[in-house]
Amino acid sequence: MNRYDITDIRQVLERYYRGATTEAEESMLRAYFAGDDVDSGLEADRDIFLSLSDTESIGVPEDLADRLSGEIDKWDAREKRKIRFTFRSISIAASLAVLMAVGAWYMQEPKTTGQQLSPEEAYAQTEKALTIFAKALDKSMDGIETVDRTSEKINIQINTYLQQ
Image 1: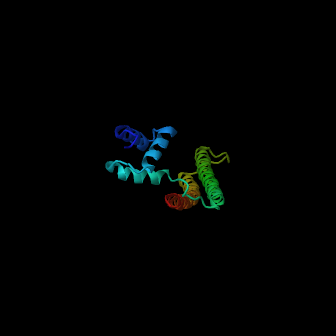
Image 2: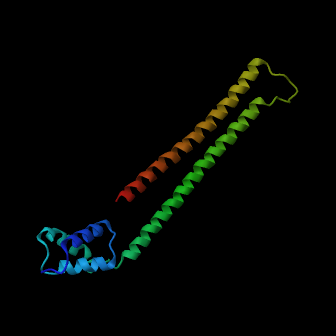
């Protein structure tokens, strides 16, 4: 006859599956399942318990620390690149804002040359300034688009790597 009460074993087993057992309770389960008189309704639980408690057969690769260190270094390098790209994006946006402010100031500042411009001359000067401004804006937007595309590629690579 088994010295363990089957209802106690079932209750402790339920707590074990929830991760709420003590070392003493796990030792009791180990002793019960190692014995020959296991209840037939607990045969599957015995196999599961014995396989989960057999931690000696789990091996750790010798180069695990080196591989983990290498992966952490790669992640660190990626984070630094990401910060550089973010800084570059902010720099471009700030440059664009300064350019727009200077352009607006230039457009509003009255000419102090001592001569009045005719409406046609004023229109031509305004068109010239706006053309220069538009070219500078296009160039800045091209730079921002390049940074955005590069950032997207990096994010895709990081996500792909993290999913592996």
